[in-house]
Length: 219
Image (cartoon, rainbow, N blue to C red):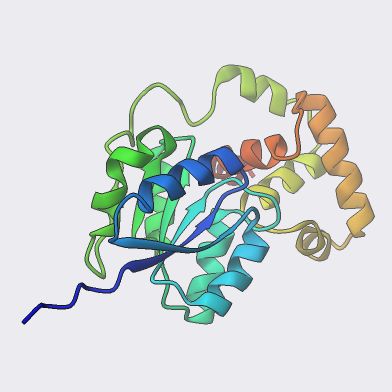
């Protein structure tokens, strides 16, 4: 009598880089152990898809438009969703891994090691946490001297916007927090991006997430 094969593990991919999603999907679907049930390119859509599809796992980028990875983790926790989350990041900073774990993630992987560590992360038992071997490598410091100098060009209001953005708030939420209009928040974001010479739709968000803890500490 043939033993039926176990059902594949269902996974949602949430990352705003199509090439990265494609590479991860091809890797996962090269084996019958996994089934990618959906993809999306921003955190807000990712949260909606989690609730619609209820996958067993979601692979979530840290820096995304809308909701970033930390904000998604907070929403998953607050809504009591059962999907387990592995966070992927370009920055293998220990503070990011610690925060992801505190927010309920099951794993944190540096993107450079994504394909070599994926299976290990997805095999972590409930309650466990997989930490990428890249975490703590000295190649990328939490904040560099040149970045400190750049932050010095910002006004207090602009620094607060960056802090809140890095904490996972949307422009509307920042507006409510600071009692200003969403239009003013958008103006701040444009000015900050110009001052810091951050080109591209996600560069400011990546910068804010990377330096969130430093801005909170200095507040």
